[in-house]
Image 1 (cartoon, helix red, strand yellow):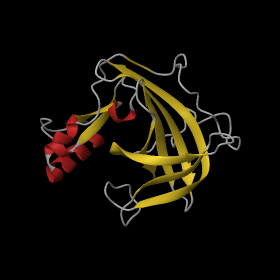
Image 2 (cartoon, rainbow, N blue to C red; image 1 turned 180 degrees about the vertical axis):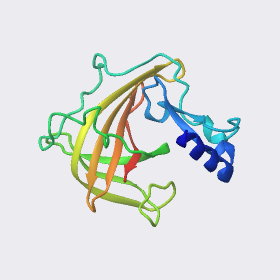
Image 3 (cartoon, rainbow, N blue to C red; image 1 turned 60 degrees about the horizontal axis):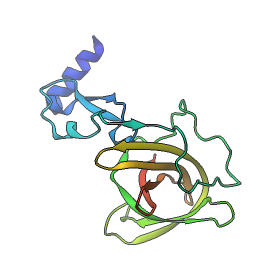
Length: 190
């Protein structure tokens, strides 16, 4: 009853379509793993069109594909974040993910440096000057696979990295059959 009153109060102040809830979907891609549902109003808000539909032939994990196997850094623990870890994924994502350049260690394949365009507040930004960040620690990969008729088989290996200056980033390496691998910045923690 108190929550309903709070929703009504906020909706009266911000507009009925501005108050939304988050519902998980079955889609494995993080940017499509939810839909926004109006808690008050008709749902005409264009923000409600973000997220996924939960449709399509998607799978997580499974057998490893016949692609180059990711190598773990010697310095990182063998176990990645647990599903119960509240900080295993950032709360906000870059939409679309930002293309980046990554330098990997020749010895163990760990991520050593990350380069991407940043604005004056060090946020990822297209068309801004490129900055290089040294990686202090790296956890991963967390593999997410997706199969759709339009894209085919897509594989993403996600990494949480701590960069110099104390920032934490969520990166992924993407493979699609017939294409070269690409790296992207998908989110920033905190």
